[in-house]
Image 1 (cartoon, rainbow, N blue to C red):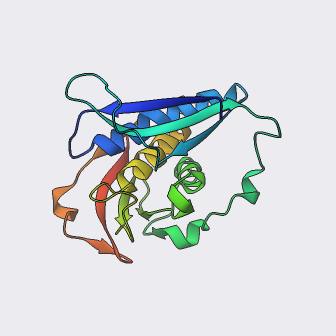
Image 2: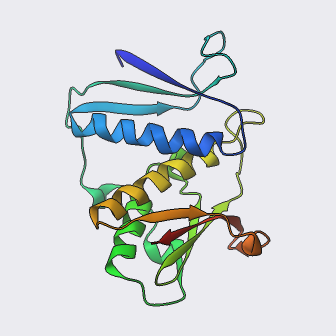
Length: 188
């Protein structure tokens, strides 16, 4: 790729989630304008100096594509919703659209670390345990979760719906198919 962008963040519990959420919106904007992108999770960023108190968390390679930039969504290797979701109530069309957007979101090695328990007005999001962090002590599931939440947000906006992210402490100990509770997405 002819160009690279490095995203810096303050360290913190949700730094990787925030980085994935924000960077995915930039990447989608670029893709919508004909610019190809690719996350570089293993990029060598040692020695890069950023703002004080910030550290590099992700690099994105980008440039105009020599070939077709997009593929049909049915060609994406993704798990079907029935494998990602447990539906506790009948879901609305809006929630299904949000879940489809989440299903199609990119993740490292297409692992789709997210799982969902779905109600009519909320989605409880769970994250799978990382098999092998890509860098010692710096797993990428948080980044992937941010990307997925960005897709959900954009889908909700398409439906003219507002959503909120909340952490329900009464669910903190819950597990689902080898995954732990991450947060809830509430339709407001």
